[in-house]
Structure formats: C-alpha cells, structure tokens
Length: 114
Length: 112
Image 1 (cartoon, rainbow over the protein chains, first blue to last red):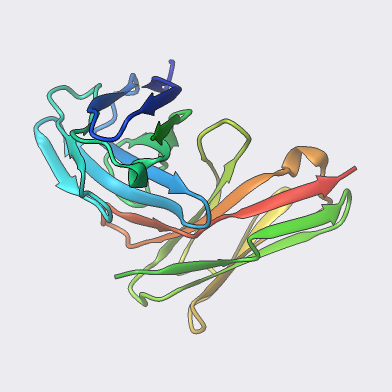
Image 2 (image 1 turned 30 degrees about the horizontal axis):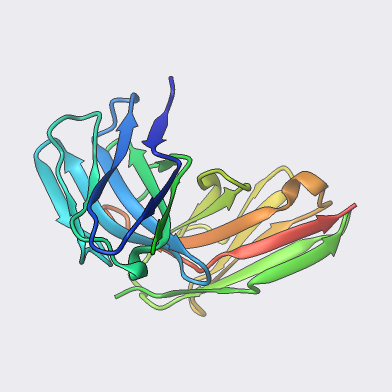
C-alpha cells in the first residue's frame, strides 16, 4: 500500500492564481480530511469528508473548496490564492472517521503564495 | 469550541534524559487524547493515545497521563535517543465525533 499520497510536494503561486492540491489513499478509508500547518498554530482542520459525495467544513474553510467523487481521492482547491494561504497542507484519512480511528497523514504540500 | 494548549514549544534534552510535554484542553466533553510525532519532512504519525476512562498508558519508553479534573494530559519519554528528535502534537477529540483539535506542537531536540 502506498498509504496517503499528495501532489505536488512544493508549489509557488502568485496572488489570485488558482490551483488544486491532490490527495489519494489506497486503504479504502471512508474518511478523508485536509489540514494546514502553520508555525505556532499546530494543525487546523480545513474540510473533511465522511464518504464519497459528502463533505463538511472544519475550523478554517474560507478560501478553500473540496469535493469527493470517489473513495480514493479528495482534492483541495484554492480558487484565488492569497498570501495568508502560505502554509504546509496535509491530507489525512482514517477508516470511518470516528475521532478514535487512527488518522494516516500524507507527506504534505508546501505552498507559498507571493 | 475545544482549545488545546501545549507547552513547551521547544524542548532540548541530553540523550538518556527524560522529556515531558504538557497539554491542557478546554472542553470537558473531550474524552480521547492522541499524540502524534512528526519527523522532518513527513506527515504526523500516531504514537500513543489515551481515553478518559484511563489515567495512564505506557508503551515501551513513552507514557501518557491524564488528569480529567484538571483537564491536563502529558507525554513522557524516558531514556531519550537522537531518533526521538521531532515535533510532537497533542490533540483532543470526542468519541463519535469527526473533528480532532491539535495543540501547537513541541519541537524536541535530543542531543547526543
């Protein structure tokens, strides 16, 4: 199993540009989520999905869109990038999404918005 | 909503010494407390967890303690080794919920 994979590893955008961060898992997990990691602020939940076709907002959803058309994939879209979105983004998955299920994290995408 | 505070933000110890990281949480309904270790350039990985019906849990050189009354929980690493150097996150969640709230992280340096 590859586990949770993320692409790209690094990305530089200009303010106003759009892009999609890709996330895929091959563990047949129902739950997938996106976090952003900023210095001194830990991991903050952006959006999550409890299954194909179902998504919901986390703590910091503004400026981000998600969709879940398949069990395996959970892309994160930035429609108009802003410098405040400079961060490291992690995708995670777990079996059912219950808080006591172990979350498996991808290697992260480091995004810089100029 | 839940808020998790974590201290210290940076911790430096000599190899062989013990390291302790402390967290407090605000929501008394939280009853599940995982700890994650993040090595350089990688995503966080679960290393140990504790539920609110347990006061202490051990796994080899790591242990977690929980004080529900004070809303405190701690990670203890004994006989530290250089490979323990990483960022450690505490977190809090409610069983059955879909959201986990993380602390800000502690960067642990173990000096050989």
